[in-house]
Image 1 (cartoon, rainbow, N blue to C red):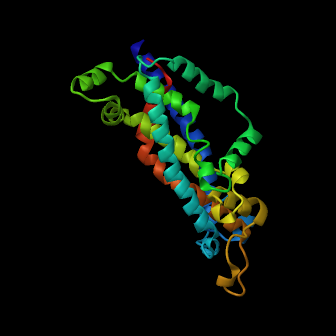
Image 2 (image 1 turned 45 degrees about the horizontal axis):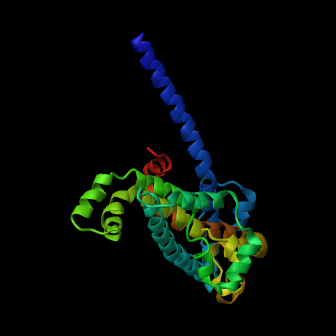
Image 3 (image 1 turned 90 degrees about the vertical axis):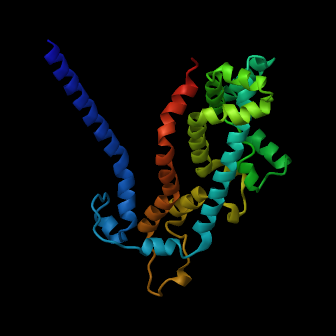
Length: 292
């Protein structure tokens, strides 16, 4: 009976593994197709809409993309928003979550209720736009960082994580003469690496993918994020991102190839960063979302 049970468990494990492999391939193949197509010619993409095996190595799309400053400038803008914006997000979220996790703070239940309330009801797009314009943030990169500086969902995750930090650490630090700021900076944050890394990924991806707020608050094309330029290429311009004056006279814009290449360039930074923080991702999300 025990042998049959072991065989059944192994069979179930095999079935689950096969299902997960198939699901992983379904998620991976579309991006792989985009990557392979970005190195192919328009004629090849037209004949083979879904490429799995590379047929050629054609760099004309990437040469055209990098022939002008449009995409490079947008990458710098998105990079600035991602780095500076994520730092602001994490600093304010951690500074707000810590006092809400301390038992001795009076009125924290009311404050937490107000925070959760914003997850259900918000001021709306037009009032937010009026506030951004009235505060002088309109057409500024700060408009993409300051109004969304704290996410209520991420704040709750971090607050719940801080709740699980043993109180003995804080008490022993106070005996040694540390104040609340030193305790937060040198004790609470160092033992919260998992949730900090997880929320850094959340905020970083959100800032890199900034699109709708950029459409609302940014009029200057020099301040466009990479996602807006990507939309121009894929939807409107159909490859019009490069400078034909820097290409050969007989050069024809490879529209499909340029679209695929732009998608790769816009997606690649996040894909490269994610594996380094993956080990913290599940741990931080689970520990912060469940209050023990």
